[in-house]
Length: 206
Image (tube, rainbow, N blue to C red; front, side, top):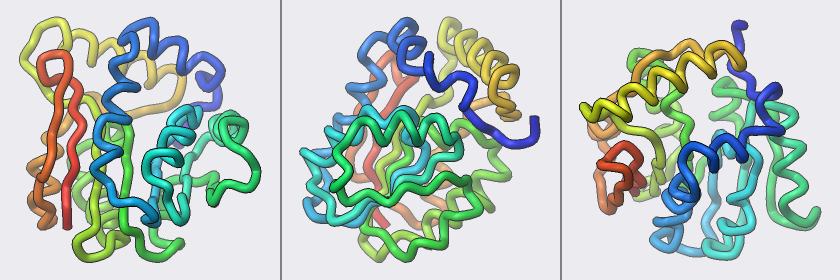
């Protein structure tokens, strides 16, 4: 399967997440939203079923959210989470569309960077997303981070095997995101972690 697409798993995605991690992934994703200034233009990539949209709209009160998600079924589920009049631009596409919607005050990547190997992250994902971020803009990163803990190392292998089978994810290991973001002249301002550092929420600034 060439393209990473979560259509198959979309109806079960939130259930599986809660089954394995409880509420911790959701807590991580909303933990730093209050640090983002209100009325910002936000690029949200890989929002999944869109459960976070009501939280994002309430806490951040964005002027606009451009919501990019490759899975049509995830987009359909996300649209059910919010009223039609919300300031959201729905984009069913992948990384090829990142630069087509102008500049943003905030880039938000919840559990998205872990889909890609380091070489692609560096040259085709982080560098491109950074180019869409305004000077002094914020990048909210929430993701799984590399760890030496045996259980979480094992869990990572299981998850990658599962998503390779059901969604065509070809990556097989987690990457040192702070190293790459620092390379692209972003500065870490806030960080929180859960599960011995396996999951982190970080707010970076350009």
